[in-house]
View 1: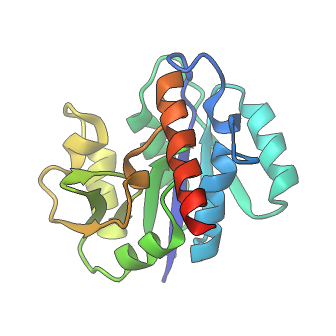
View 2: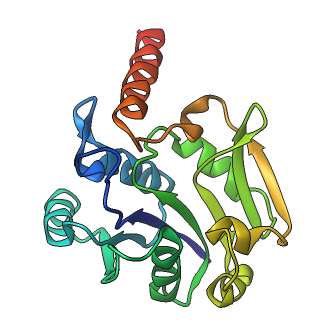
Length: 201
């Protein structure tokens, strides 16, 4: 059974002041980094939930990853939250998926090695962590999907998963925690990635 990937890219990017999925980091957009990791792991399908600037993003990704990306639009992106996009994405995944990774488009610095470690853990929900802090992506197996879709309580995805058995996989670095919600966050991403690239040289 295959494992899919849901990339949540429907948000307004209001705190950043620029469209986050297409911000450039080390020569690639944030969402290209994310898709690259899922492609290395051979996720199928890789689905992007779009909203703001949906056509722009879909056209960009169709050109970059011809035939490899599926899309579902959140028509209420301006008034809804990320959990609404999670539900739309889960409903759109094919029946032969045994699970899916979930992540916002602005968390680009996890890696395929982490995905392999997570997939090897049989728990219904598997999360990466670094020094005690949970990060992304989250692996949610199909057995949990119906309860996520029916959840109407508080806390979004976190609330929906709070009573599910969860396992944690320790990440090798803090990239799994770093997002780009604000310009300051984005600068932290750049600094962290620059430091990692320097160490490899």
